[in-house]
Length: 343
Ligand SMILES: NC(=O)C1=CN([C@@H]2O[C@H](COP(=O)(O)OP(=O)(O)OC[C@H]3O[C@@H](n4cnc5c(N)ncnc54)[C@H](OP(=O)(O)O)[C@@H]3O)[C@@H](O)[C@H]2O)C=CC1
Ligand SMILES: O=C(CO)COP(=O)(O)O
Image (cartoon, rainbow, N blue to C red; front, top):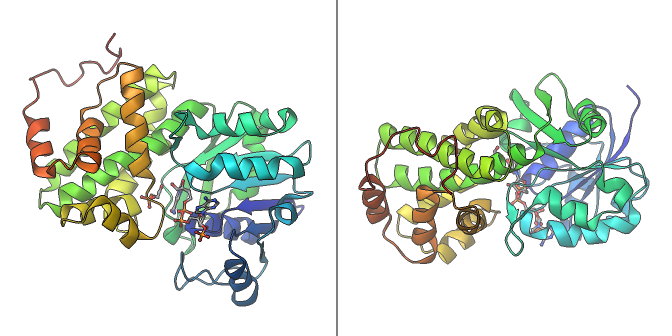
């Protein structure tokens, strides 16, 4: 295989794991870390102790704290920074991109100030030639498992099929299987909204509720994810795939999930601020709950779990009361409002 010049922006757990996949596939990869000490640690020790403790990175992952150095002349750029920082990083990257670069992102969330999906933010900030080839990578993929070569499957979606195929070819290998997907909207919405339900699953487990409650959260969570998705023009079947139910199950049932752990901490009496400072890593579900709550109002879609979690996170509602209120909602048909959003 020809070695391609690639860059990964964001040296947190997921960016580091994805840079390792590219490096193991023989790609020439430059990883951007915003802190110089993080870049030095990766170059000198081939480790990232803060985000992937115990993992040894391939020695051909090189890191820099200069965005210009990371991106210049690179034909594939993978952005893996928290959702709320995508716009600022994209602005810095834009002047250094080559015209035919493919830019993919792996962030899961919405920009809270605009309620835009991440690919929409990227299209606004990147040069028009590059904006046509934006792609999104999503699916059930905990960094801690990918770095250990545990079998993982993901999807890459783009409006430009060639961009999706280029991304697929660069990342796919025998333990990291990449499928292409045509539905950018559905893939982004599924990957973002599942974090809300994972927070709820951590709360539910922490409160001592059982498997019945978690199955209910996952299934009814999927129903409200699909409802908002369809109102926002996603394809319903996307929610039955890896970036929908696949990621939802992985995140709601995994010890690796930061969103699950965050919910669990809240169930033990931590305030939102205490929980965030204990986590020390991005918990996308918090801001995604705020964004989805607003999107549900805007699109007139019922999202009862999101609505209750929003009250628990931001209005100090007792989580047990939130569960009681969910259980006491008007009796209804399981499939109601599944096909057509409420008008
Ligand atoms: N971890 C995973 O398994 C997966 C994560 N994702 C998604 O990937 C995205 C990144 O998450 P992940 O790598 O896990 O996060 P981590 O919490 O592991 O790391 C966050 C990274 O982002 C950097 N960062 C924080 N704030 C900013 C900022 N304002 N500008 C630029 N960089 C910043 C941090 O730098 P510093 O150390 O200097 O603070 C750090 O490198 C999220 O959207 C997440 O949902 C998707 C799939 C799997
Ligand atoms: O998106 C993920 C797995 O697919 C990671 O989830 P967390 O951010 O909850 O760790």
